[in-house]
Image 1: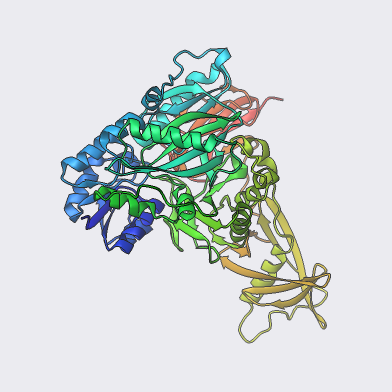
Image 2: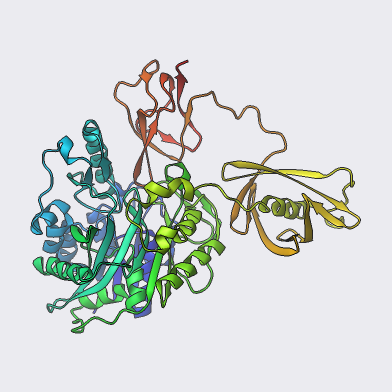
Length: 616
């Protein structure tokens, strides 16, 4: 019987596995890099072991160090989570060779399916070896790992070599394996997958379907179970193919078989030999704890002959610290508060006051809603996200709310091209017009001296405050009169340092105000207080390229030096942040006047990387 589990992972998945272990009375052990020394998963475990360093290649991808940590902490089993070493057959063998229980599939099954090239061959599908114009568009894909890393869509043959190079570098950084392959890219298909669970006694459960079509950079953003609106008979076909894939490699444990559905047909993509990020929607629909089932299977217990019945519908959104309006750029900083209304499952690796760094994936949390019908689950989750308190770096919260309420999604007509079509509309700024006023009124109260009213202003001298939100600036005016506060034509019913009530056309609305320095949050609107007089030195020359995020310069375009001619859109350099590489391109056609970036350089947001002088 398992008594102590080390989770060879970090963040949200480590915390999620620990939660089930505690419920089962199993001790928990965490491993952590130096960057994660104070991370939530390291704090909530019964014991934790340091992996010296910060980069994944030096820490969470070092299987030898993880096995040593398990032995040193007295763990008798290892759970891999997802990502990092979760689909590494050599790591699974090392765990078993050390006399520990491996909470996952047999190493041979991992080896057969973890490489997407070998998995496709096993299912009778060969990757492209010679790409021609007739094959375009194609998808460059990492053979190991997942999560959209090491993946590129290529629409021009001339771009293929560069995208292969970039994909190999990203895959090696994320998974320790730079192997990539090329396959046809099926556009406007739906990403549908089947959760399977298999024991050591020959039973394989297909646990319904999940739709994961809403993706950015080939990484899932919104998932749901069951997949809605599948053509008649297709769900049974998907179940059959998934069970066939599992039996082909004598699979044991939890796994996922993924398909692209287009034109009423299912195209096999891959089999993930691990737990998936989106497993909570299956748990909600089937009333299961998949981590508990993984532990039971690892202990040798059999599954029942038939799986439990599915009930209702579940939807999950991934909350990322990123800015969808600016090329999904990851964000860092202090997470002051993260709270959702009751009735929503929140899986997270962060808590209030934690710092979000540059070394790992920008996912903050997963929010999951379950209800009797799809429409109810979608409405419940959208409303909860809208009312959530998320104070800290910019997130994709508004995008998620708008996506859940988009007509294509509510009608279940979405596909993997959803964000390609709708991103500009979904990221159009629409801050609450009364939020800056509420912030100004609350701020005035917070700054007033004890014993003195905050509203002893001369009636003829209205107070003015400026705020920025979603790339726009707002100026608000207010003053105190004998009949009460006047503020831009809106009646002020109540105002104190944390709560403001405004009335417009007889309708009153309440605004909760929280501030952290110059950052102000009014309900779900984030604002930044602006100085009365802008700093004239905080200006950059036209054509300046500033770092959009903290990260590392991993590459500069070959031959690029000051004086080089450039064309608008040309890639000039690449930054790596949060396990993804981001291209910095020329803003205009002209000459590279300055180049301040060199490979290996650490940069902060707003740091000057280069200057392009536009051709007249």
